[in-house]
Image (cartoon, one colour):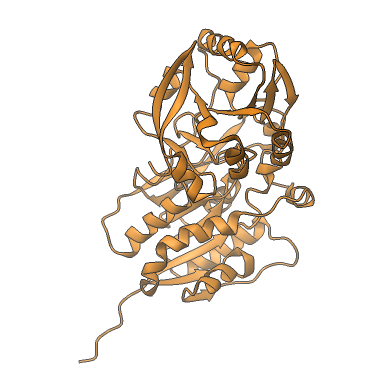
Length: 378
């Protein structure tokens, strides 16, 4: 009796190759600004983030059949990695677009994929959500600037591990997660406006999938005043790279400085050296020498301290400052929203994320520090 070939797990793959371009350029997103970011010398990173996810899956390649979007949207990567694959559809001329994503998602689903794997940010998730039928299993590899939706893995490697569980037939809980997107024009003006677009069916494992972002300004003004006072008493020669977020903005306001809610600001000796700085600006400032600290805050509900909206603080910037000088500021109320989950690291550099894994110093009050765990995985 002839042995029947084993059924392969069919994965549809779509990459938004322009995702994340606006991060290092401090453009608060990538929608409609890709050309501007490229002109500023920003290098696309989305494909490399997908590569990191697929490297985890590579040992199971014989169990997988990829159905992929053409060219830079999928085919080039999987072909180079040696995965068996079929190319589905075609690309329009010129730069890839949201229309390409939506059309190709529809075409891939018609091929009967078991999982639609996509890489991008909230805009890409919105395009996928609008194009696939209810119940189609999907999972996002985070590659965008702003990721408020709950359909993304906490980082590329976590996406790869979750896909591996599915491919190997492990028991994986399925559920639905919110797709949200933000008004980028309002975002660039310092106003956060998100809206609900729908849900996607996702493989739901708490260690691997991020929570929906919680917005809103911290109200613990007195605590921020205390921390601000502490920072002002520190050595005037220390330079501070202040990540985005309501907590750090509150600290700057307590010092009488006009910072940015959504950008990276640079402070030394009570004066702002740069407002809404790009990654290149940070790098150039660091070349002047001196002692530096990076102060980031955790995204409420999710816990990311690197890789969500603060890509200006790149791996080379972190290394130049020193991993021991990456500090977190968070009130106790904000820490409680994490419900014991660690801070999450998704810098785009796996080695750096591993170096940063462990207990991080958290500024939580006047000369009050706590230790809280950070990890590349939840």
